[in-house]
Image (tube, rainbow over all chains, first blue to last red; front, side):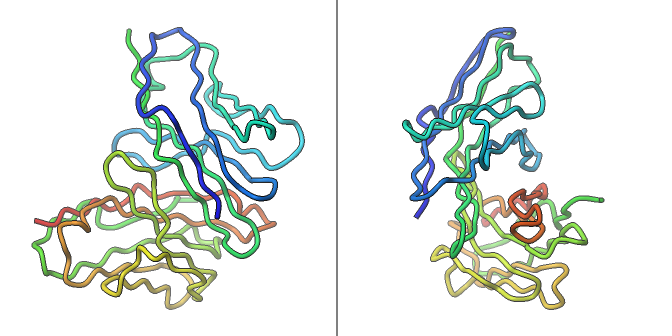
Length: 114
Length: 116
């Protein structure tokens, strides 16, 4: 069964600094990978997704993520963080064929200092 | 597109009571999912429907939990004899069929359940 590990529970960065959130997945085949963001009191919003092709994917709000099969990773990056990026970020993997459900990591909470 | 709607937004109940939540998916979406999220955790899969058929149930879904989607449109999630451990955010999501964009799930804002 697929699984996702987000090693960092909480990350604090200064506004304007770069950001990288780590995600490792476990899945037997080529995974469908996602990053979602959740602000307090809000639903989950899709930032970006990877299905196939170019391993560097661009998302909304200036985020990007790189799929590295050799490292089973799909890390999320942003060159310059804004205060409004403070939220919780979830990496997820979608199973295919059989169990077609989205499996989430435990999330990384991002705090942005002014 | 009005998005996925969940009601109520908040529910406070006493232990042992029954509660029911409703989810209205995006109208053209055939798939509907229920997830549960507790503090400090990612959403955990509970069950999903393809139209009115319930295709998979998690082992997290005990006998006290039941979900329905009678006409393939809205869905309800009922918890009987609630326990304090049921306190969580219950999230609903919908999507198109796989291969038709169904890989992207659209989430509602959730129903926050507090069991006293």
